[in-house]
Length: 250
Image 1 (cartoon, one colour):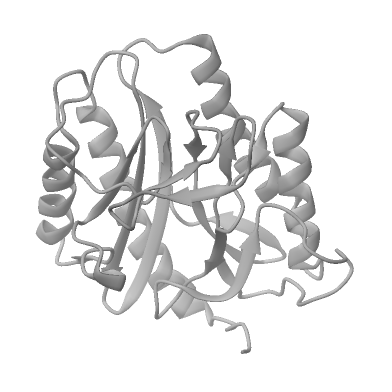
Image 2 (cartoon, rainbow, N blue to C red):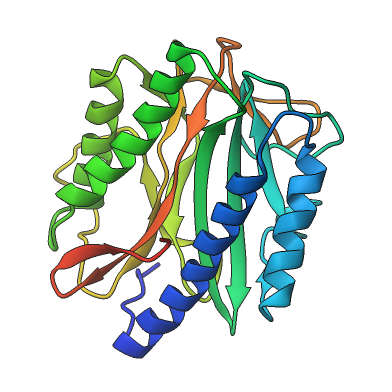
């Protein structure tokens, strides 16, 4: 399937959707503290999105039950919000998607609850720094597999490993479009589609500590590493515009 090339007006529409995602993430982040529950954070996000005449795009997507993925501690992605209060020293991933006027936005952060350990600070920093390092390296006509190579190398040099089996993705009129963007290389990096002006896609490093092999919990959503250790996740939607990668979700 061809990777869509967006017109300037379409990029502007995608920027609006993603700006709303960024605003929602910031609001949720400001409310993360010991004692609050993921379900309460989910409601804060949903109410804010709806108040801006948009729709929380994760709700009902592939039958996901809530508006926000809240991934606590060893859950790396796709955690379902529940009523368990967050505790000092927890870490939580917040992944939010919206649909605004038929266009989609998507972004994620991992943050600490109160004071967290130095080890967890390094774990979170790996996801965030890898994301920005990869975005900075993007150039038109490089291959997506070259981007995956950069992501993998950035994770490994920080002492961690990428979660396997999950990936970044294109985004536009649908929440998930071509291409798939792995955080590790499969096959040769000099093969496959190239990054072109007007493409829009999500990059999302998902970080494990020891083992990258993934496991889905009994709720059929929450993804953990088989090492049973904490993980982290960061994501931005980027557009290739005027010859460089522009972050839309900030």
